[in-house]
Image (cartoon, rainbow, N blue to C red; front, side, top):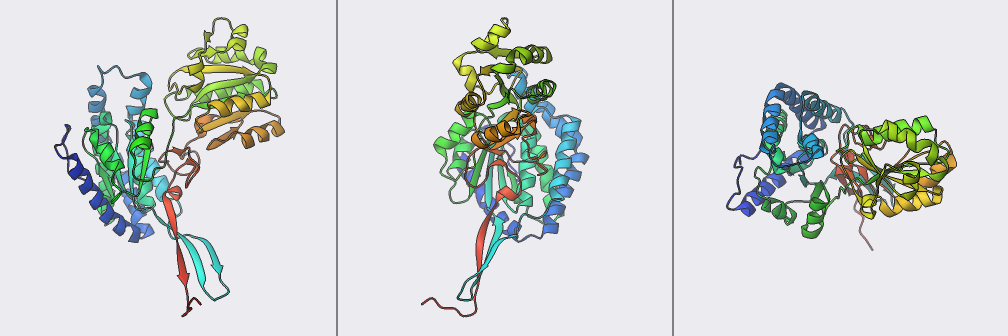
Length: 426
């Protein structure tokens, strides 16, 4: 763990971030040579530290929450920032779950023999140094640190300034785990400053950082897309849809949409728009409105013919990630129009269809080009923990390297090992 502790802007952010990068690069070399047992021990010992220091984590979080009490932050932001005893316990459990997974390193991904006698293996290896830039959701730092340790990568964490006190304690716990395992504590470092210039410096750190992963809203992602000189793995916003096909079981559909929207409105897996076949809209919409009485529904003209008191939806609503108890409602004339609407407005994160017609579901799941596409399930299952990864570093919405929940396996690259016996190329 780095030893910076200033809350205010540091005079020479460039020097400080470059130092973090050099230390991370050295730590990455050692971590790549560490045994499976060492890396797993680091995680289980960090989990113990989190449990032992839960009160410290919550005290730091209380300082963070107190610092924004007059800032006008919305409920979704506050929910993402807030830690509770259960959430800290979940963070520790995630570390244990990641430790229990198979080692993603040293796997033979392919092996082939050439006519000249050469044997070639493609083997999984760490990426190197990862910079994780995320907004004020402190558990992301724990998940990212753990997944990087598991995959043999050093990580530089730059969380939102509002979560700085929480992040310090979390990184200290990860550092305790690394120390107990005999691994370099510089493998997990925190950019311990609120100075926003640190983000730009990280994005330009081509000599020390191998991959940048941003996790946050459009503002952060746009900044990364505009400024990054280092390769990136993007996590875009979750403008997710649940489409109710005319064959949907109504009871099932209402329950799924209620959960997909309201279980936690402030997470990226929440459904933001429900799309309904006109053939069942008259039947399902009143049921949905009753089940979602604590959610503002904004509907198109067809939806408002059924529920006249519904707030009219604007064009902007179809492209909005609300992250709150607001959801848009679109009525469509059949499967093809439903697919076209979702394709036009989805952010490519997670979309779902509720249907008993399996052919319709197959068409939707094939046509909708999102990282995660679901059938008869809540979009809130779009989560690394729910996918058996223990945790995730984010949901990758691009198409290169990794897509969907990014766990330890997705944080590896590969190299070719070529074995010969004196061959010379003619």
